[in-house]
Structures are given as structure tokens and as C-alpha cells.
Image (cartoon, rainbow, N blue to C red; front, side, top):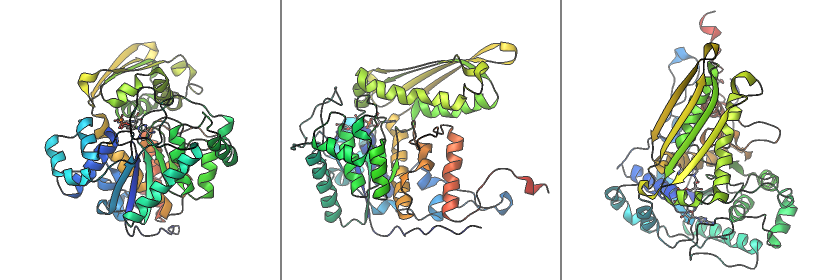
Amino acid sequence: MAEPIDIAPARGRLGVLLVGLGAVSTTTIAGTIAVRKGFARPIGSLTQMGTVRLGKRTEGRSPKISDVVPLTALDDLVFGGWDIFEDDCYAAARTAGVIDPSLLEKVRPELEQIRPWPAVFDQHYVKRLDGPNVKKGRNKRDLAEQVVADIRRFKAEHALDRLVMVWCGSTEIFMTESPAHVTIESFENALEKNDPAIPSSMVYAYAAIREGVPYANAAPNLSADIPALVSLALKTRTPLAGKDLKTGQTLIKTIVAPGLKARLLGVQGWYSTNILGNRDGEVLDDPESFKTKEESKKSVLDYILQPQLYPELYENLCHVVRINYYPPRGDNKEGWDNIDLVGWLGYPMQLKINFLCRDSILAAPIVLDVALFLDLASRANMYGIQEWLSFYFKSPVHAPGLYPEHDLFIQLMKLKNTLRFLKGEELITHLGREYYD
Ligand SMILES: NC(=O)c1ccc[n+]([C@@H]2O[C@H](COP(=O)([O-])OP(=O)(O)OC[C@H]3O[C@@H](n4cnc5c(N)ncnc54)[C@H](O)[C@@H]3O)[C@@H](O)[C@H]2O)c1
């Protein structure tokens, strides 16, 4: 057995900073408090319900993940965050309409105490939104300093030991890497000069990373996924994760596609469409924000199916993704997938999937897990990109020159092997010859 990694204990309280107190954040916060008080169960969360097999299959050792690695207890989490609207977390959760009012009432006092701090916001990056609770500053550098001040004040006021930040704000317009994003110096210079290449999400990410606060991006916009901020994270020993939570249709896609590919069934077409009526759906109704989401949703099949290795099966795949804003459904998204398959001798088949899901109900356990695992990473002195958290994301951040791993089952194996590695336990390869020798 290898030596276990030295992990600092999860002593004291962990502050969870959420940027954007919308549907995902309020469902995470209200849900965590409801679980803490015994009103509901944390279904979908690996940190709360998951187990990890240790040793041989014959040993019968499958402890809970939370008994294997030291995770912060739900009782020790303190939530805070920013939004462009002034509503407290209770009012925002009522607006989001995800959690039943009867359950929300039970956690109302705790939620009402969480009031969003003024946000760093510029409508240029999210066209369909506008709100009053917005910071003013000389330039983006000044705004970043104000975010740093918020972080420090929150930490002091609640006597917190550690912090993590998760961007749960709206999806910003599509942007690609620019010269401002290359080095820490060019980035800081761009902050000073109010360069349009720096959207609001990067200002928060910069503030967090400079403070050594682990940062994850639940949305598909670039945010911390640029060389300048990855370098800064290495310098400040800050773990990073992202981008775009893998929920709903893409979750199902990354469950089904590896199965089709495993059996070498060809795929000629994959048509995915959604109706969604929450504020996220409204923001994504803007073509520039949708483009960011579309890129994130579309890339998964290319990587899973590997058309370069199997041109006869996947080279001409027609992959279409649509999201339509349809207010009557609120957060209860409905997704349809039509998959045109090809089998033995070229015979066509079709597979139809109709998923009536709840977007934020699928997202909340991910936000909780990512926050707790990033804090674990920080205490285990793992910093920079945390590829083992790819499991949770549609566009996993990855080292330059590597392709991202999208197959959910490989991602889960990577996550659990990382936990085994941290504890000095044998990694599981599934070779299994020893049982037959
Ligand atoms: N729900 C899911 O399953 C899911 C999956 C993947 C990604 N996402 C992404 O997560 C994000 C949040 O989703 P949601 O359903 O909670 O959306 P939402 O619209 O309910 O909440 C987003 C909140 O962010 C706030 N906001 C926007 N820009 C901000 C800024 N610069 N600073 C502070 N606050 C800001 C908005 O005012 C809003 O309250 C979206 O980008 C969405 O695309 C959600």
C-alpha cells in the first residue's frame, strides 16, 4: 500500500460563497439546511450518500466516502453570496419556485438571514438581465478589490476557517481566449484598463484565486478557464474546477453514449431539444449566451464517440442541440432526444428519450459535492485544475494538450481512485486476475 497523503482535518467552519443567488444556489442552500435539520434526504450527493470500495472484492469493505476522507460536515457550512437582485435567499427561492413552499417555510429563518451583497455585473455579458444591486468602481481592478473585501469581511464576521466559491451566476456571452487572458500580468493590466475581454465572472474568479479560495464554475462561460487564472491558482495553491454542471440532458447523453460506443453501434444523428421556463432559460434565450451553452453541450459526443478512431461509425454524426424558453414549465425542464443508430450490416434503429427532469434538483447536490471536494483538495494540498472532479461537469477543465474525459463512468472511476490515492489505498483497475490465479 502507498503512503496516504497528509490531509489537514476539516476543523472549524467552511464558508460557501455562491455568485448568483438564483435557482441553483437557493436550491443548494435551502436543501442543505433542510437535510441538516432532518427534513429531507441528500439524494444525488456522493459526499453525503456515496460509498467507495476499498481493497479486493472479497474484503467486503465499502465505507461511506465521508468516512474515508475528512469532509466538512453540513453543520459547519455557512453560505453567503452576491446577486444583482436584493431579494434575500428565502424570497429568491420563492421566485425560483423549485422547492415546495411548505419545505421552504421550515428553513425560512436561516434563508432570510442570507442577503446578497452587491454584485459585479455588466449587462454587456448577460443581455437579458438587469438589476439594482450592483457595485460601482473606478475599473475592474477596483471591483475585484471590493469582492476581496466582501470575502474577508464574511470570513471574519462568521469566524470561518476556510472558504470556497462557486459561480452559479447566469451564463455569460460566448467568448474565446484573448491576449488579456494569457499571463497574470496581462490579466491584471486588463483589469486596470477595463478591458472588455474581462467579464464579471472573471473578476470574481480572480478575487477568489488571489485569496487562495478554491473556485468552481457551474456555468459554461470561460471564467477561471484561462491561462492567467490557472497560473495564478498554481501560485496561490488554489484548486479549480468547472465548467457547466452536468445535469439533465447532457447527463443522460454521457450515460447513453458510452454504452452505444462500447457496443460499436454507429450514430448518424443525435437531435436534442429542451423546453425550460426558469430565469436560466430566459438568459439562454439570448443567442450570445446560448452559444456559450451550445458549445459546452455539443462537445461531449465528439470526445466520447471518438470519430477519428471510428470514422465509419461516427464521422458524419449530425448533432443538434436546442433550448427553447417556455415559461409555463419553470424549472421543470423537459428534454427530448432522438438518436439515429446504425447496427449490424448498416440496419438503422432509433432510440427516443424523454426526460422530465428538474434542473436545479439535479444541480444542487453537485454544487454541494463540488464545494466539499474542493475544500478537501485544498486541505490535501492539491491545487490548480482538479480533473478528478470532471464527473460533475459538461465541459471539464483540463490541462493544455489533453482531451477532456466525458464518459461518466470513467469520470467516476477517476474520482473514486483519487479518494483511494489520497488514503494510500490500492487503486482499482478492474483487471481482477488475482481472483482466478
Ligand atoms: N440548473 C442546472 O441544471 C444547470 C446546469 C448547468 C449549468 N447551469 C448554470 O448555472 C447557472 C445558474 O443557473 P440557475 O438556474 O440558478 O439560473 P438563475 O437565473 O436562476 O440564477 C442565476 C442568478 O445569477 C445572478 N447573476 C447573474 N450575473 C451575476 C453577477 N455578475 N453577479 C452576481 N449575480 C449574478 C442572477 O441575477 C440570478 O439570480 C446558469 O449559468 C446555468 O446555465 C445550471
